Length: 232
Length: 362
Ligand code: HEM
Ligand code: SF4
Image (cartoon, rainbow over the protein chains, first blue to last red):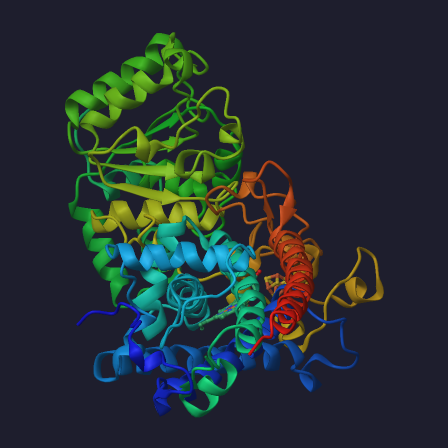
């Protein structure tokens, strides 16, 4: 099935189209929440809070922070798997996140148009039912590639603690650690990609809000209610 | 040289039957095997012809040998004099010069395909290997030649296993770990700078008694000693989980023995047995002495920035900064760019709606 953005009369002024199915919207917000928790707890794992007073046996601060990171990580990873399943059974727009139509010249043309739009060089952006090509590209790298990378490196680190025999060690640690050379390198890469996801989020949130206000279609309400309305 | 069994050699060394059996059960224990293995080890040693070991030294500092001779379980004297039948080790043996070199030639002939080659240090490859000369020839030649007839190779220490400090950037002598030079023999890596004495002797004992190499992980290290991180068995771990850290050398937390994570301890990323076996007959290990682990048994530990940084420095961009500095800077730039872009967007929108109005708009 093709995944090219549809530029057809569905986008006529005043028209409302159903884009994001329930599971996609639920996933979006669950994903956002888990990334938020992962980024904060991850930062605190690398840069722990000031020491707590009292007996070691009375405290478990670092333990709780790590536990929260790992719980959010499981939520993030399982949601990601369910999302892949939904890409298979869901509608056209549910597939977009995982596929880039790089052989489609029109898609690249749309990309140029979007770039010009962000550089204030065209007055009106094109209309899209799903993601515009630029957003599509950013999401593919930020969420699909970034997510897979964080899951692979994250569970590789997790499997080190869970040790040999654990599923995480078998599935991830056993090959990810040798692939990167050793554990410290995996930490560094996991940490660097965490920041890359933060960069993505800054741009993503800004672009969504801006498009919601300035483009010819709704954005924020679309990921809440699932339907997108075209203004002109 | 006639071929003797291990036990015969031991008897010749004046070791009694009683100490021999004690040695066998100690060996079984140190390898983590059931007591029922002790008679098996004894049987093997009584019947098997001893396997000679040639111990070569390349570009190194001899800390592996220094560590080795301090082994307490089993005692090095037992290992060297009887078990190991270390036929050639230019640091430990009495022979020198041509006599010594003859031993290598002799063993290679007599035990072709049947001796163990232990390598301490590594061969530098630059300038045709001239940075390390062994008996008048580049070490790399001696290594290749000897390895060709060996049954298996033990790479002692981080030099032979990974390259170690002599391979630090820019690595002028092109010091190269053994497995990158010898690719057609089974290699056991026993990294560490130096490796723990008991780990060294236990690996040798295992190889010689069972006549096979111990189970290795993907990086070629014996799982029994490199299967866990320092952090997994560190006695300061409760302070880590509690969130109690040394923040500065000599602060109150340091005196209380809190976790050294914030002081750059590499225990969480280092596979070795220091926190279980410890050093010098189990007396202590770096963390117990108040200093973080520097990760000396890990590949590349010498080129990963400060020993005292928790978040590793990244040098790939020509600047030295860690992930937080790079990530935070880019995030700030992205944030500023967003604000600027938003401002320009608002302006252009205001202008275009003005234009629309003046044109009669919509
Ligand atoms: C968007 C997703 C994620 C973000 C932003 C994130 C962030 C971070 C950060 C910044 C660190 C500190 C790295 C360092 O040691 O310097 C970290 C550590 C870690 N993360 Fe994640 N992470 C994410 C996903 C995951 C996932 C899916 C897992 C899977 C279990 C995971 C497991 C871990 C583990 C095990 C550590 C090391 C903990 C330790 O050393 O005690 N992370 N994470
Ligand atoms: S001192 Fe090092 S190895 Fe021990 S618990 Fe702290 S970080 Fe882990």
